[in-house]
Image 1 (tube, rainbow, N blue to C red):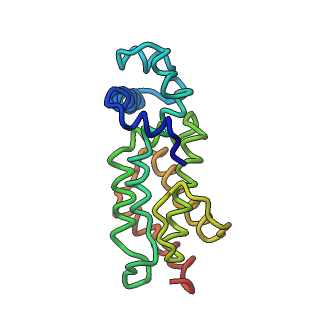
Image 2 (cartoon, one colour):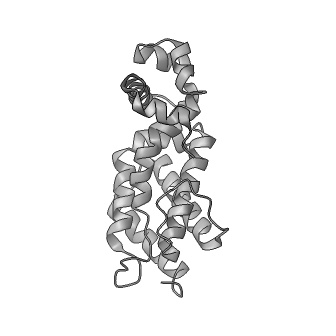
Length: 198
């Protein structure tokens, strides 16, 4: 839900610039060290702002990480397969490839925020958005708000959790095989899950 304060902040170009600088700084920092080793002071100093200015916008580094990752997470989530355009065996072949290619392109960031020293809040944020998207794709609900509350849907939760688990393991191992191979390995599992549903 968008609050009056959120709308005011979105309208203020200074706030947008500060938040953009903080997000960009965090994304740069997680390329070189684990999220758990990044402090508010690290981000504020690198972004050229005071710690109090940081706290005007975010409670902590984890909240900033969720905000910094949201646009990238939404790109990633958009690549999760659904029932809209099935390929020969029922699961769109290009969406899985896009999903793993996106992960590979931003592997440093995702490895940092989703790995063992990452952020439980970012992981939960990603899992929820993935579950909503899978639910919308599976049911044809067409939900536009990825933060929406949806009915409990076991196949959607299972698919989102399985994809994120496979992706996290692949990232943790340094992406040992190319995205096309990951898509080929994952596709039959999704086909089996949705055999009667697609």
